Each structure stands twice: as structure tokens, then as C-alpha cells.
Length: 65
Image (cartoon, rainbow, N blue to C red):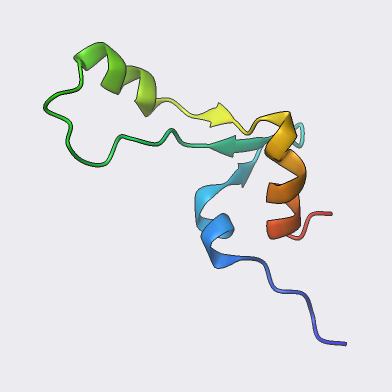
């Protein structure tokens, strides 16, 4: 059997933390930034974790499950 490949898109978007959670970046921070407030853009800068409802799907894409 050949090895299972990870999804390239997921590989670029997600990272694992030391405790096994999955980190992600916020959306809506790439363009059309002039109409967004400084506070909103600053909040979108920080990383967050993937919601537990989506965690299984992301783990399958990363072949962690």
C-alpha cells in the first residue's frame, strides 16, 4: 500500500501545538483593509485554535487520525 498523503492546503494552514491542539490564522486579513478598523485588524492578527467541531476534519486532512 502506498503512503497516505496529507492535503497540501491543510499542511500550509494549520500547525499543531505542544498539547495536540490545532492552531489556525484568522480570515479576512489579506485585502480590503482600509474599511476595517485598527482594532479589528489587530484582533485578526493573532492566531487561535480550531473549533472542536472542526478538529476531526482537520486531523483527517493532516493524516493525524
